[in-house]
Amino acid sequence: MANNQKKMIGNRKNVMGTENAQVLQVELNGCHRGYVILSYFGLGHRMRREARIVRLNVFPNTVLFNAKGRPISLCEIRKGMMVDALFSSAMTRSIQPQSTAYLLLEKRRGREATTISTGPIAAIDLENYSLFVGNPWNIGEQQRFNVNGFTIIRDPFGKAISFENLRMGQMVAVAHSTATTMSIPPQSSAFYIQQM
Image 1 (tube, helix red, strand yellow):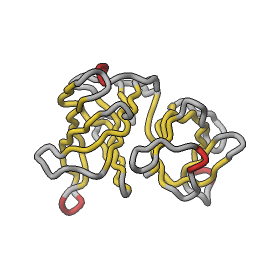
Image 2 (spheres, helix red, strand yellow):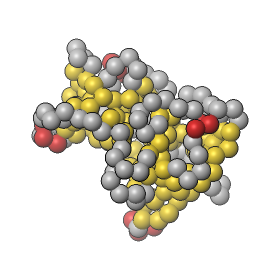
Image 3 (cartoon, one colour):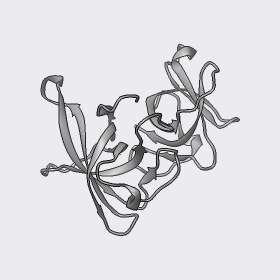
Image 4 (cartoon, rainbow, N blue to C red):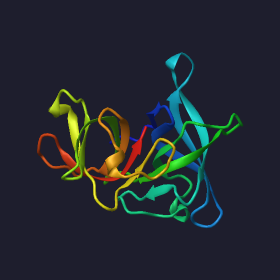
């Protein structure tokens, strides 16, 4: 996103997500466990946008990337940072609801090197390890994501799965490079794929 407005990615079954959430607090238990408290906008009563706060518990299987798409640890997340996040829709009813973080993607002001795109899988190319996400009836509304041995793929519950487990029609969120080809559909490298 070019602007700095907080934006909700969506809520699909077991996964929720937000773009441009602000980190209000980071608590560490080592560099791979702890929690972050985020402020973001979501849809509330009568479909109005309202500010929300959530505590996301971070575990060793939580995936964290910096703005360049490189893996980082929780120790590198700081108060005041902007992040994109994917997390479990199962939340406590406490004040500051808690949930499990699946992905935290650090954002930087200016041109972003990484972003998250969501949509249905329109096609899967098993030979070339790529998937097409978007409108299955219009190639102009799709994006091709190239998958490699470093791409992390998770099911709706955060469990690691293989590329072969993905199916057409499934909703996915893909963390990917903003650098794309000028082809139709545009191509980009996927860092992380989350079934929704």
